[in-house]
Length: 464
Image (cartoon, rainbow, N blue to C red; front, side, top):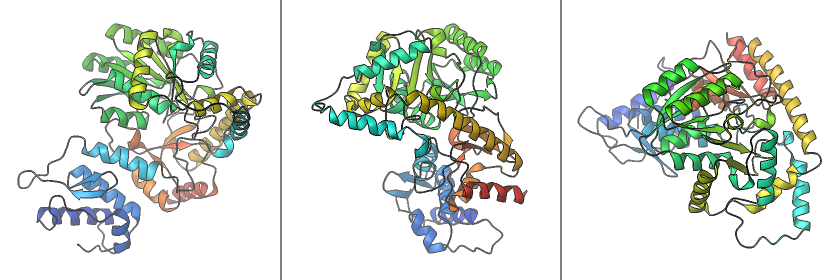
């Protein structure tokens, strides 16, 4: 193995990448040979784990290594002399899935301003405990499978809640899922085939982008602005690429926090009708919105829109209960697909969620949560601006702020440094259609007030 010189002016990551490249090209490491694990290499060479992560990331992207789930990294087969054979999906399998599971969703990091869930003490834990006690006291027979579409009383409650948002439907048009992720996956697998062109928010929802890549979709970005969509660019790309479906999050969007206006929603539906594509509306933050914003589904009444919601963000991320609403024919197709892939969803967790939602303290919990998020939004926005960050917008509601610092060109490098201080950041490339390096970071306002996070921001400010 090659030697790393910590005193060299050449960055450590560059030394590691160069060392592996040389060994592969001169035959010292043959195709199929297993590379040292990240932790082994870091320990043996006295470097940070996150330095090795960055180096392996680049080696995979360059085609020298490939990642195999649960097995590690292996030397990739080469093509003609002087060339490296790179699979079309190689960068995606590493960047989106491997990085997501090892770094972005790493629960071992104590401070999580880059994560996508709320702290435990912000959630409805007491409501879940009361629901659980009531469920156990009722001695409900939990033998057998639940209903394919999900627990009927909860579907009826979803129907009533959506009616309050001016979406008129029957309980049979509601499909309960294991969180919104399963709902989006079902919609994607029903609508998308390999090679299909799919329109997505840019930047967009990281998990969805990976899922669509996995299905072989050709992703086209619909640029977000502080006020929603860039409608001119959106129409240009629709005309040029003729997408089959548009996956979008109009309200309190992740990662930007932006919300589209009523006029913009009308225009999106006009474009969908004119150019004949389906719209999948991810509205999982609706309960966090203090304003009565309309949805695409409320304007379209599920003719061309599939509507997705979730209770995981407000009750508990461990209660994996989401839902999907659609026209009757399409909903039945999605229910059959759900049965094929996993039979039914968990009636036990659906009953738990239902008990929490009908709890007398639920409305107070939601109001308190909105107020806490509004205060946290204002406080973090002030702190980020003081530290020299630029804000994409100031939503004053919801969980996220999207920001960048003039000293940072690639937010992934900042994320590695933060991880060494036990801080989880959300680097912008994870939310990018093309996975290119990005200076932007997603901040979860509910996690950003920790003292370690504040010290990190102060250090970044002082470095400027």
